[in-house]
Image 1 (spheres, helix red, strand yellow):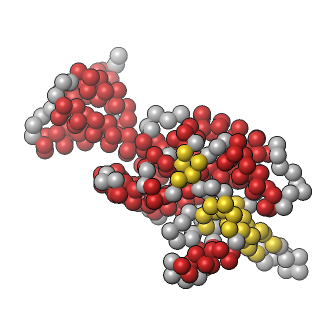
Image 2: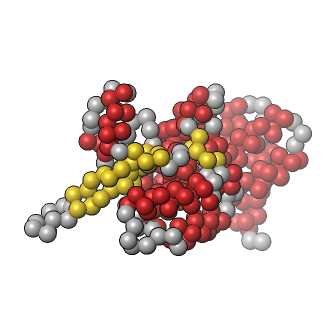
Image 3: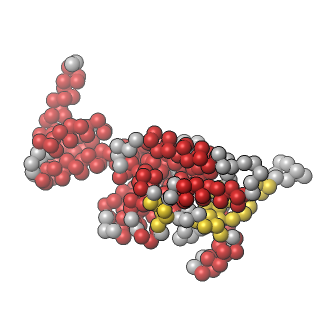
Amino acid sequence: MNIDCMQLNKEITALLHLVDDPDTEVFETVANRLLGYGKEIIPNLEQLWEATEDENVQYRIEHLIHRALFTELQQELAAWGKEELPSLFKGALLLAKYRYPDLNTQTFLKQLDQMRRNIWLELNSYLTPLEQINIVNSILYNYYKLQGHEITERDPNLFFINHTLESKQGNAFSIGVIYLALCELLDIPIFAVGLPRQFVIAFFDTQYSFLTPDTEPLQTIQFYIDPVNGMVYTQNDVEIYLKKIKAGHEEQFFQPLSNKAVIVRMLEEMALTYENTQQDDKSQEMYQLIAVLKEPQ
């Protein structure tokens, strides 16, 4: 062991001895120094927790571990948001790490690929868009038995994609992300759209003009899908819904959302869910994660 490493261990040991200091200013200074080591300090904190019988000190240590993990999550989410084409599924797995910090992401990436293969085996190039979606729906809701719950149930667990894949229980966001990720892998043009108060996905038809090939292709929505149950809705159904909630007819409602925008909407709903379940500290952390993604690139 070199001298620098010994000095480092001495400093960490000295700081750990001060975690139980009754002076809150001293503790905050100690906490900030410890958190400066990043997530590498967590094993030391866990050992200290096991050796401590004082519940107040244990709470302090738990809070420190959470802060270290949350800081790392913010950094990972910021890096994800800066990618040229951030993967929606990987973004949702990052959100799941908020609740499950030791999540093995490879397990769920493999599971997604298995789901993709099962759908791909049923598809062929002669199917209409609606027939394609009927196959996706049959695999997701009948074969895999995914069961959607309304957002109004306000259960935070339903947002975490690993929980949804393991328990088969989810909501519009967690099941919607699985649906979107699979369709992207299968080259089915399904995108989330910005309808108010609902998370809905839509099948887009791209029309190219052979007379003016330099112009942007025209994208039109053929139909909408509710990820909660796979129900298909027409444009008329959506117009009736918008009139019912007095939302008008804004162009942005019918534009495809970027993967980053989907994750932001997911975080906004998670924040509201934590507020409704009197978990204001967690709600504030969701807003902090939103701020990370909204920072200028």
